[in-house]
Length: 185
Length: 75
Image 1 (cartoon, rainbow over the protein chains, first blue to last red):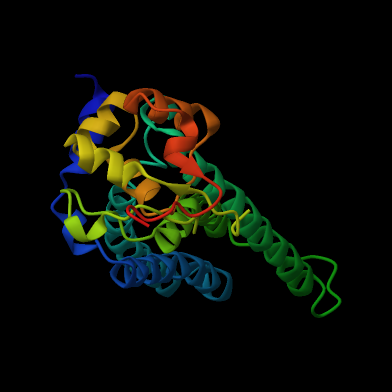
Image 2: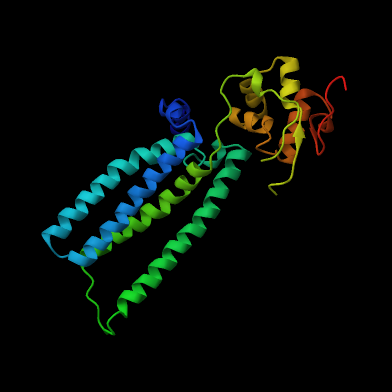
């Protein structure tokens, strides 16, 4: 069994699958993930307003730590709920999972474009706020900004998939599920 | 695309032959949940998968899938 097969097995058998088996529970999880991501962005505002200072460093690092502690398990659980549709290589996915992945990436591309567009507008507004020709940007902002953009780029497809996932069919055959006809959702 | 309806008889064929979702999924090379989503009508298969399903049950594809609701048995 190679690394990916082991990961697939682990995702299938995660006890957390039961915790997040319903759509409302998964959506609450997504809301927590979005909050963790927003906290990272809020940390950038702290740096812009107060850096360089001990206050800015301490507040940012605290926000970063909370975001990390919350964000990592949330991403893990959402990836598990999607049964690896976003984390496994394509050869381990079937056509439905591949379609799910493509839909998530398409929507995430749009969402990330909006985030970058808003960032562009905001930086322009800030740059020209007082008619200044020069602007001092704290060096402390560069790495956290890159990290926040990376986190946004990485997490949005997972959050979108988690939001959209319908409740999975029961693992064992349930007689009440048997219907002769069905319709496309 | 979302209002395209494809009806199927997979649950009936599977029940008739005593095949579990996991067995059918393994034979088709798909995730077992995909069989569940197909049965619930929440996913419409590609032509390739539809043909594979028909071949697995050894019936013509129109016996398994239809654009119109299947008549109830005995009606």
